[in-house]
Amino acid sequence: MNHASMSWHCKTSFIAVALILFASTVTLAKEHPPNIILCMGDDHGWDETGYNGHPHLKTPVLDEMAASGLRLDRFYSAHPSCSPTRGSVITGRHPNRYGTFAPNYSIRPEEISIAQILGNAGYVCGHFGKWHLGPVKASSPTNPGAMGFHQWLSHDNFFELNPTFSRNGATPKKFQGESSEIVIRETIRFLETSKQKDKPFFAVVWFGSPHEPYSGLKEDLALYADLPDRYAEKQVKLTSNETGRPTKRPLKDVLQERYAEITAMDRSMGQLRKWLRDNGQRENTVLWYCGDNGTPGDGIVTSPFRGQKGTMYEGGIRVPGIIEWPGKISTSRRSELNTVTSDMLPTICEILGVSLPNRPLDGVSLKPLIEGTMNERPAPICFWTFKGGDGSNSEPYIAPALQSGTTPLVKMMGDLHTRKFRNFHHPNIAESDFDGQRVILHDRYKLLVRGLGDETNQELFDVRSDPGETNNLIESAPVVAAELKLQLRDWQQSVLQSLTGADYD
Image 1 (spheres, one colour):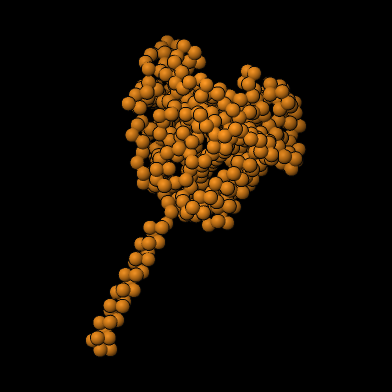
Image 2 (image 1 turned 90 degrees about the vertical axis):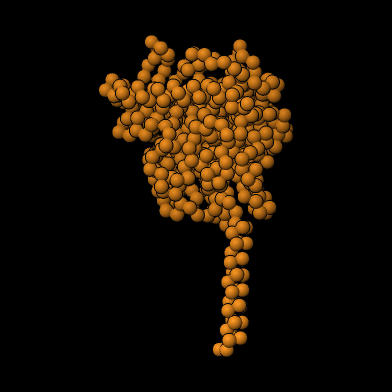
């Protein structure tokens, strides 16, 4: 080869390499950040899955997710009830910071939501199902749209078969069918639209199941027709589907319907995963499932834990938790790290490389856990049921007319088939504000505190060796208890400072 030929060959080779590098750069530039889908069952406790050893329930989809993804065996809801836990997902903050103390307490409009953050990062954001952080009507300052979701088909609270939803704040409309399947069908419509627009999507899917009152499709009920007869001997209190008022029914019948709802929800998760797979989205989608609190008294028959929904024992706050992300979690793993719903926002922010809100957060990023490099939690998890009264003597944070819901549900509240929400100004901190059941969970030790001053009651458990919380170590480990109590008090002070509205200045 002569010199000219060699020169031409080198130039063409250089050009070819440059073109390849340019093409690679263009491809990388066009690659989407991961899609995010956060799913949550309503009153779905830790043991109510096949993969956690439930003796009756059939949850093949959740079992498959647990077998292929990251199984969070010590995953907690931020609160033992629904509205507060949902607030923790949206904000990454404990709900007492913004006055979402209990069910039917709204969020505050000034909170920075995960949907607002992702919307600013170029995501299309949708909410589907239970909202319960304020009314979903258009005029509400805390509806999903006000919190950053571009589209929503949502309910103020929970729902059963043939549910009623509001689309983007419009007049509620009834949908015929099984509620979990309806919610997923609407979610998939949203995902398809986002895919057509070539936009990354963020979807929050909050099922109405398996919250009571229970109902199920015939084929799902048939799966549980042969539950043990011993359950028929006990009567439990729950809501009547006919009257919306409290009634008592045999536990066996109640469990048959509850389990049917869980199975339908599980099947719906399968429909969502199938769409992701069939449309080439599964590898690059973070799919995170959890419950919002422990199992209620009408359904808690097989839990290995102490307590139930509404309590701070493990049975009230430990819930199923699974993350699937095939592109990054290629082999199944089980984690014994303490994790909580407040971790969702900081985890997603770090995955995407976006800044956290400039205010106190209570969650930590689990991105290192997803990557397999996180061996301990950098900060304890704190829980707190605020004992501040009903707010009747306080100034409403939002005008009462804006806090009235529109989507009907079976369970009545007084004479209403809808819900009214509340939130109150809390400008000053008093010693009495520190009351209420509160907990600090630091690796293996869990301190529970009730009361103030001389009326304080404390329990300390090693939940690693004593998951049933049967052995109170308060007398045998006083130094551990004292240190945790100081940390808990400091955390409460920070939370109360937020509650005054200081974070919004």
